Amino acid sequence: MADDKTKRGKEDRNLISFKEKYEVDYAVNQLKKEFPDETKTDIKESLFDAAKQVSPSEGREKIMRLARKDLND
Image (cartoon, rainbow, N blue to C red; front, side):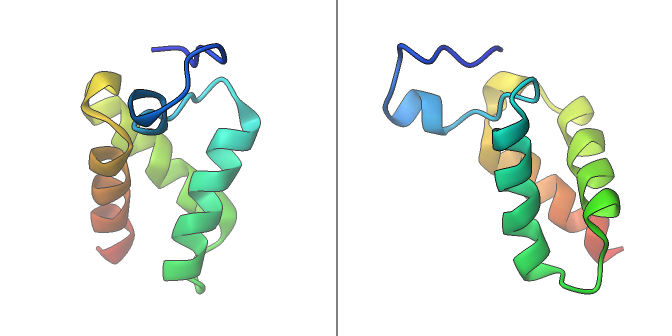
């Protein structure tokens, strides 16, 4: 689901728009704080792989959780 900049609030914060570089960078930076030994490229790959496994409507937290799991393995 694309990010609609006219809609703000909880519903919008629950999504990651992978078309928006700043949103991807924000998610990568969040994960980089938790996994400082990983490269940003590896983190970004894990994030995109996680996003492919779930529906975008399932939200940011599920994508981040799957990316964390992948980075822990």
